[in-house]
Image 1 (cartoon, rainbow, N blue to C red):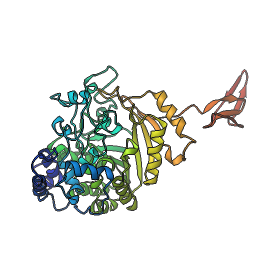
Image 2 (cartoon, rainbow, N blue to C red):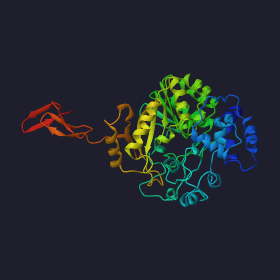
Image 3 (cartoon, rainbow, N blue to C red):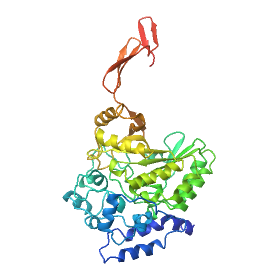
Image 4 (spheres, rainbow, N blue to C red):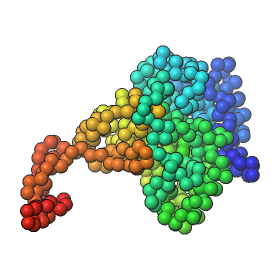
Length: 445
């Protein structure tokens, strides 16, 4: 962060800077890891919360902790700073907790990866240590395919750079902006659209205060902006004081009506959703949150508690899911995910076609497959559990919704429709028919 404000710099980056010192499970005698972690926690800013005693512990996490971190207390395990500081970020660390496939080992040992590897201990507990085809494992561990570039792929497939009036801000739609406040994530997804950004930006991965001020000045000077989506990286990896400062600055801009936060924290770092954080967030209503989920295996008791805290604070929760080949590209998996999210009071909002980032063919399905899945959801579960299937158009065209072909044709003034059972129905007088010399025009549904 900028040296012009030493206190602000310390509060936003201290946890991230310390994270480089402790990525592996303890190989020393029991007790040494606990002492090191306790020492680092003494340097955590006073504004950050450690109150997480009521966070539940799933069976997976309990077994993983007992096997790989036996000397770590439950209080430390449930502290989000400890989770960030002990992420697995290398071949050396990951090989201690799972049997890596030859392909995974080869990718992890390439000196300069496409972008960093990082998995929190909590999220690592959800991975199948014996199965290289485990869906969550495939989503966070690299494969050599990432280094193969295809002609249709791009570092910036959505053309965000050309719609960026100042660094860190994307203004594509008339009344809203995307504010990229950090390049840091606690866990890196291999299919990330912004892999060019994450883990590479400034001290600890966060943008500088100087860049934040430039973006805030642009928003202040642009009255058309009524909606700000705060993203990155993951903005919930900011310290409470820094996040609160940013939200307060945005809320002070009179024409900004709605604030949104995009995050995967409830899925990969649910310990971050402390009661202090929730208290901070609820000050800035109307505040909405878009949560990133990939697979029903992520819907653990820890994640349920995190979502409950946010929902109880009056924060509307929506989910975003990327359609990924061999990971979640079937009706059964996505139906289980979306129905499970509804039980957590999270409304499935978008199902994204995977963006054509560099090295992504092994993740991308066909559009036909996506439409087939949507056809298998609509009518077969409650409408609240059916998201919009969209393509974020390459080159900066924005989100374009895709639907199965429910309109089967026109008969006179009637529209012929297909329902979820593939039965045909007629909707009468769907058109206004305008006749004239030598012409019949169907105006509109």
